[in-house]
Image (cartoon, rainbow over all chains, first blue to last red; front, side, top):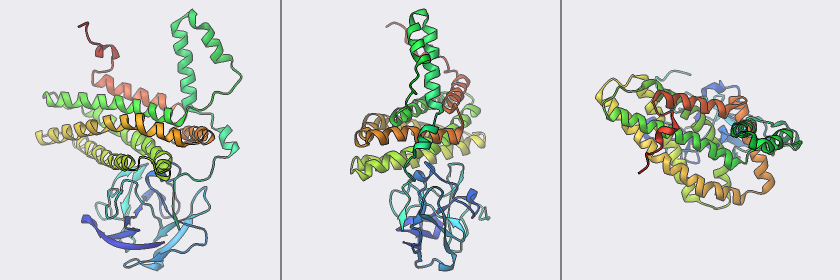
Length: 126
Length: 250
């Protein structure tokens, strides 16, 4: 699995995987995967089998990639600059970012710059 | 590397028996209350409900989701009344609209739709069933969330201008227009197919899991609490009396 970048809509260059926008959930605080159970139906985490490899594609910084334990599962969630990464079920087609700035499942969701900065409306770190 | 399915590990026996939860309690309590209200003629029914030593099985997941649809339907009735009042030039009922939008976001969009996206739609997709319909439903979930965000933003600003009033009715009308057929298709096509492709034991386990998720997110008696909130919204919009919907003899 590769985490790469793409230019999507008005957001500019953001992290993607398989053509799908990747999101972060500020309540995770770069320390945990708080979206679990049914939440992961709407926001499926990007996961890797334990010991599996994650690679950085064009524009993504390999030094910022990592993994974090996924509660109740043997696989691990891919992180970028410590943030667990998720996709959005509402991005039915590749190349969309419909989940950007949605408040859902207990908090807001943001796409992420290759720098590791979530794209919040006021461009401040959450 | 794999994409998360949202289903996690199989439900263990401990979790299966631990999940003694709110919907079943609510339905049981409601059934007892309703039977009591009927009078002495229902005494046999009351005894049967209260003295049964057999644990009452979990509400089937499809029935669980349909209860949520009933809640959504009542919110749609509220939205329709909001649209009627605003279009008629009445003051915008800010508080009930904001309350309805908040309920939609926290209960329908963050919980009910998440259940569908985690446990119902993936099963249908894996079984090669209703793929076009599931795609449409996923798109509609997303559109609904954006409409709700817009309604929330407008009410937070007070809907003070004619432009804002028009924008509010446009969003509310679009929400009602989309979700009426949306939930009708789910009830009549999606849930029956979901039931058909799901083995009996898994279906029962999903009922327990839905109840457990509800308890975890909202605490015991969640549905009763949500229905109370809907009733308060209806009362604020003057549509809280079911009898007022009964037509005169024609």
